[in-house]
Image (spheres, rainbow, N blue to C red):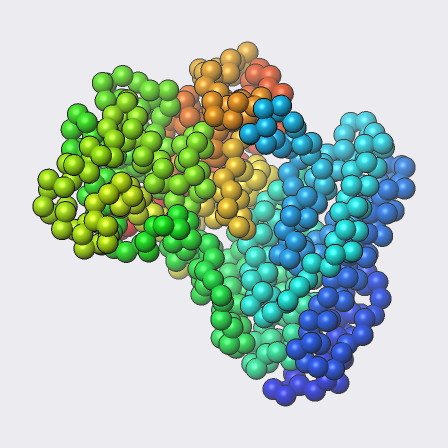
Length: 613
């Protein structure tokens, strides 16, 4: 149903009341009508709280019915109803109480405190764990009800504490954009409905919810056409979900390009219309109209607090240091030895070579987009690029140096001394040296691939096969449930504050039956807990067409082999039995044509580096 409201700039309270009543009747499953106060600003805040309370109560009622359900059909029915109403809550709940939201909607994997020597495992809970339970070969109603009881308690806790405090215009705009990011990256990928694949109707409810809240803000718009454009866009998104036949056939590429990206433009116009000022910077820049552009990410938000703002001069200094072999003890190894620009900042070897010409345990990952993650190295042993650089400097197989040695060399170079003095108030010291190199690496986020240009509406050159490949990557193949868009690595949206590690079961040699696990224990070397054995950070697949061989041990030479490994169910599909494998062990049932389409899409992620460096 299309709503065409034409309120004047000075909307009356009567008009606002009519809008709110219309909204209540247009939204499915509204529990009760809520009163609308008379003060305009307080009206909006109170109405938002009331609408959230209504949706929360309805979700609680559905979960309560699930607690009592016995038959398989009734359990699945009330589970789906609970999820639909939970998605109505998502924009507000995830923003104002992210901890409780996470507890309700986290991945169905056990967690562990790496510092806990007793290896106390926190078992999975929430809707995703419940979904796994109700889709088991034989449903155990005791387990189902146990998960439902936990969800019920968490929802009641939210109801008791009422997390919406000090609501403001900028917070509403923040949570709106956060909702768009979550739908783009997690929602339509099936991340939070991995078995039932109920994501299409569920994510429709996110836009129903946003429409409801925007209608409460109708009188806030000076430009009423902008308000109407929002309602039209939100309803058009719902229609796109309605038109999808099923999870696999949903056209994610068109949805992002033709629905989500235009909403970013509306969002920017709303910031101006409402004259909103934001109190702090976020990981995503303000003013963006695409999730896949060079301007999308705020690189300064990913650096340590002590790091100065990124400037071209500091980046150029860091680039010169990056290629300077004199910084190593032997004078023969630079950062570029293992991270060569012409090979997408890898070295093309299965195992990188140390300063004595011997192979090390792992290969070199790309440095492209390395700054847009919260952990470095395959085992995630350091948290930022500065510490990653320090590790390389001190490593006896790499630079085999120390910062004091490097500082001494640089101080004997007048040109370097003058440049450091100009750019850092402390001149050359251990922080400034590492920061300069890290700053250069932070500029290696071009986002100028063929795919980026197309989905950002700068050109129309993608083939039907490449579009299909993206839709498979984001849907049926489930690649994007670990390689999250838009960076396509393990940095978890919408906060981009955590880099995920996965246990895949990577073999030591390229065989497809009765394989043996590679003996590199990955994160376990530092975490020392069983669940972290063979866990490795999820890298970006951007520029993967140039970064062979693949996996931490370079066991696969082609993308076809990588897709075959995943299609079989990872290690479990080639004879490796790991209790802690995080990759689902089921076959993806991808045809050869589908695999080739995914590879064709991955080739479109190849950046035009000569224009970026």
